[in-house]
Image (cartoon, rainbow over all chains, first blue to last red; front, side):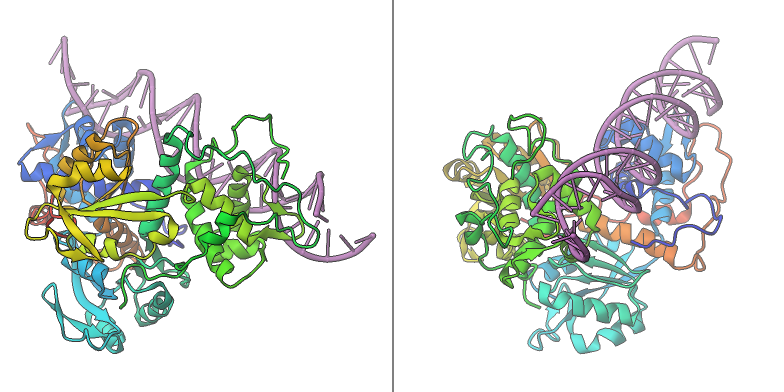
Length: 264
Length: 264
DNA sequence: TAGATTGTTAATCGATTAACAATC
DNA sequence: TAGATTGTTAATCGATTAACAATC
């Protein structure tokens, strides 16, 4: 992730653990809901329940931000909303571009959770000339040729990639060259970026595979049941190839670099 | 083979660390790509690079599965593909249902990465009667009324929720009651489920917020620069409310329980 | 004051990493 | 054999958790 660590004594707000940063948005969401219900204060116990974590963890997390609570009372909802928003950098405007306007790109463009948190969709970009000018979520799709000028003219530092896997690295390179330093990648591929550029990835297939792993264990191990070890045990002469069981060959199929969700 | 491990029992495949499970899909993807290029063997160094991790971690991860490599040579690609697939439970068929066919639900339905990994979309379900019967990704959308029968008739154990946040918990409850034990949640809300049910969540807004946090730090701290502490420092009399700065009020706006991406 | 709840400590747990003996 | 690379160890690092003194 190459986050500008070390140096600078700026102290507080400095060493916030990554795990804590990842939970701040959860707290913020729960707090925003309380704020809308005009709830003035909340205890660590209540807020933790609403956010889906335990209270010790929540208090520990908040301790990295400062002492914003009041012993015996709890936390002031509005004040915490502000502090967390500020810590996350949401009190400023973040123009973002979405590249690859297929089903997923369109879904992202229509996502209401962006605008309300300081994110503004500056442009939707797609490589398909047939898409150019077509309105999606109220914005006309721009052609990839304009990528660099769009980034520069809008001061975009965050880019979202929703293209097929095959186009992702190239799009990434262009985004970075044009000045983008944070990328949210939906394409099922590992992107290589220079130091100083952050990449976060969202992969639908991976999430399902993790669920399948646990699901398999829950099944009581009765169906296919834990195959103790492949029938083949001794390794052949030359190659170490312990022979891939039939099922392995069947696995190959398509995919591998199948589009994240849609053509761009 | 002959994993000189401890005793005998099924033991192995038992205590695989969660962090390792989460990386197996990454290795599998890299291996599948190698397999398609007919690469016979790969070293931990090469595979680690392709998967975006370091080789020590990869070898440690694989050690939990067994001893599938050959010293001095590396790993047999086909064999590893099979072993990891089996470990993840991908050698069996997993029927899934997607509930909430908005932009996101449609994007998921069209996602090519499912079928190739053992996941089969058994049905697309939406609450809007106007959607019923409409073909999406080649499947007719079914009405929510049929949810229970669809789950039971197809032996579905994995459900994907892509509804607005407001409908998520109710959909979740019905899925669970009908027999689903693993849920992939795209709605920006915390779902409560009984023990034994796994929930994984994907939240676009959260990922962007985490990027914004790091982006803010990269900005060199010159723009708004690290506000050392709120202008208000002493806590008022009665309520602890240290007064929410103007920006906080502005935060409120809409959202809070805005649809994940689309109405269902 | 008495009750409530924070902020912090310290123990524990899990994950990462470098290094290297084992061994193909 | 000599070179290459795994599988494992042990040290380190970071995250979680329970408990409780501080204090509103």
